[in-house]
Length: 88
Image (cartoon, rainbow, N blue to C red; front, side, top):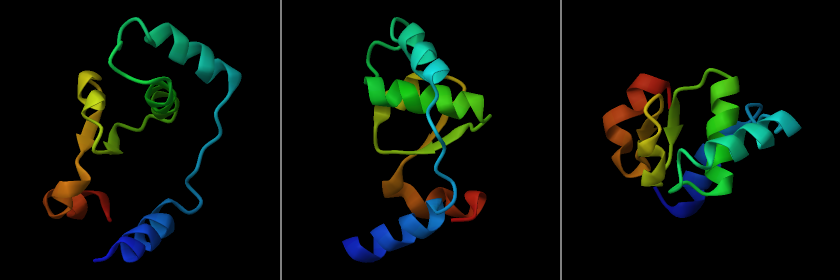
């Protein structure tokens, strides 16, 4: 699969699944910053939105998510290992 095919596949997968970020999410992310110093502000926003939505899996090459015990990071380079479990 080339880059364009991967992008198109991902875009189809997330279509209709993009969630808003609320002011409370930003405040919660700021509170988490001390617990997860290795995570960027953007990653912290992802974590709090995921928590709000009760989402426990994230597809990311960013190993910083491994620090968040309630999340399971699915490495995109290992797609064949996990895609059947998430309907990708």
